[in-house]
Image (tube, rainbow, N blue to C red; front, side, top):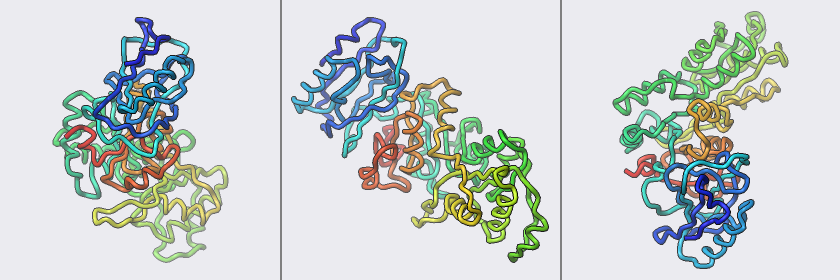
Length: 391
């Protein structure tokens, strides 16, 4: 092993570089990203359990010349991938942000122990991770039960807006055979409701009952006019009442009249009327394997009809994940975001500074992940949640 001599103070985290013979080297291309608050002269504070990176460390780490030399020597050996192990306790103050993750063209193929063991908190998407449509994904219930049994903090963040947090918690609880609190669930509907409530007290909602319920829980009065069965602009104009916001989510009863009425409200209200979209997902995969329209498709239709641009609050906007970390006093490096979509789930975690894992039980494929760039590129790829937990 090589040791970074500058960090050898007994009260500091000392990065250790170790050759892992059971993990094949993947690439020497690694980029820095935010792991957690860490000293500008060290590589960052790692999760409590050892974090084995599937790609070598970067060739350049600020303020650690000996570490750069160690990396170069290890890369020349070609004997395996490098890992970081946490040594000692405590961290130096005066931190900058620094997190490491692989940006190579390949992903981890083997490791000692389960990926979940390296993190204090797992943030789970629901559709595509726990279930697909009405059917649970094989091994997901057992995986969550194991995580709860070992004390891993769990949070469930879904871009689905049709159900309230209480409804989603009840479904997860039914899947597990154990209760889940609504406070551990965040939906795009609940985030949208909080955003609307900060600015106004009235809204017109295109969406299902769960979205309207979240609005009411946030103290927002939902306007529910009786719309004509057939489109009639004069009739719509006659019943139109000003609102502070128009909110669009998943709506399986979406109609031309709803679209026309929402567009009318946005035009009548101008900039004083907020236009909020719950989530950008344009489609989702049904249990039969076909793609079906999601909220993003309806938001796009209203943008086109009204000439207004929506403010979309669900994933990948990082605010919900940042709020969760603040609530549970977690650092980004202690959190793994798990999801089945690159543009929402993976980008969501990356933009909040956490590590990310794509599961192949939902929308995105391995090939798409390997082509992805920037915040849409996952740190890890696994087949299912069960594999992440080691089942």
